[in-house]
Image 1 (tube, rainbow, N blue to C red):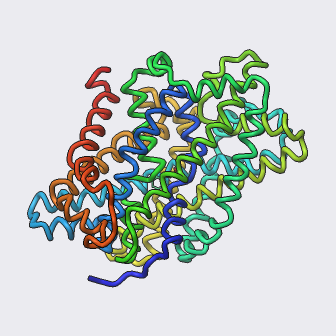
Image 2 (cartoon, helix red, strand yellow):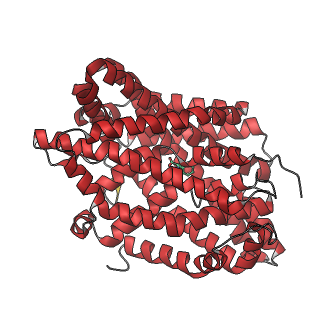
Image 3 (cartoon, rainbow, N blue to C red):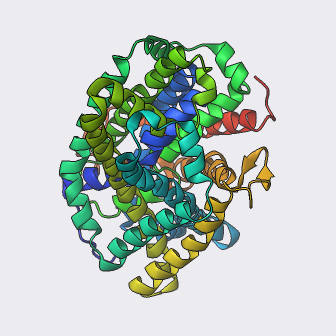
Length: 467
Ligand code: PHE
């Protein structure tokens, strides 16, 4: 087996948290919570992080560390070792490939949203804070050229970092910038919570109300949205954690390594929820606008300036808003660079394409799809819809609610029935030398509980099972 360079304990957590914490937490989580009934969505979400997210992070990291390879080779080698041949061996190898593919597609629309945030870094310096409303956001994303330019600039920075191989340097910066992001999120959450009327938003977030779920679609629909978000936010079912695990040394402690990531990730998501939803409700109580009609994409770009303006006035408020958008861009960057890494390592390890060529090739491919995604928010392409969603949102739905659950479902089946849970547990416990208190739970979770949860939630989310 070829020797890999290994991460330090902190290095692994930092890179993994860098991949996990991003627009999924700060942008998508509050948006989905707002659209899917608030408290009931969050309750589902927390349940899934605990019961599905934690074991899956552990499972993926274990596969990676055992094989010391990226997802395609890891699945292929372990399956071959377990005697899989012919179609079965091809299927497991294909599962690794779907991860690389998911990373590629996510990058296409993620760059567009990151471009919006980048655009707002500048906008916040030019437009008075109290005039930054949803109409401004709508206009900013639906013009033909500007959002494309920002998306491509963001993508170019990502590709530059990956080509130069300075992702490690960028991750080192996250040692300082991630805590700063968290501190600023806390400041913004306090501002938002201190607005008169914000309590309604807090209630909406914290009190699970099944009627809200029914209004959002159905319980099954909300549950699938929460499960999909859990996968998206933790970068699961995309081979991210397999790749990161492959850089762990054999003496690392897999179980304890994998608790920190969901903890930080969920903390940041909840904080971002407290920044946005209470502010949207507070402003709505003044304007009389139905807050749930404001809880959609772009809510952050509206809530943040409003609450910072109320708390700090225009000058200081603008500085904080600017810093905040900049840090969100940085968080997005640590996610996009790792998406490129996983996709490129597939081309490099499996198709023997040279690093620079692979990375630039991916960049060009993503650029084309990003332009289409961006245009799907404009009159030119917004009439092309799937299930009521434009191209960009459909891609996101397809990845989060279909491809990621698919990858995760079969990862459980792989551990439970092909590699066998006891072999995974042997790896987790470093051959029985490290304590793993919920080993039996892990076995049943992989074999029965999680495949069943994923299947039931998926079938009810697409309307085949009714709740
Ligand atoms: N988890 C990242 C976020 O929350 C998104 C991501 C998904 C990154 C899949 C890599 C792979 O923003």
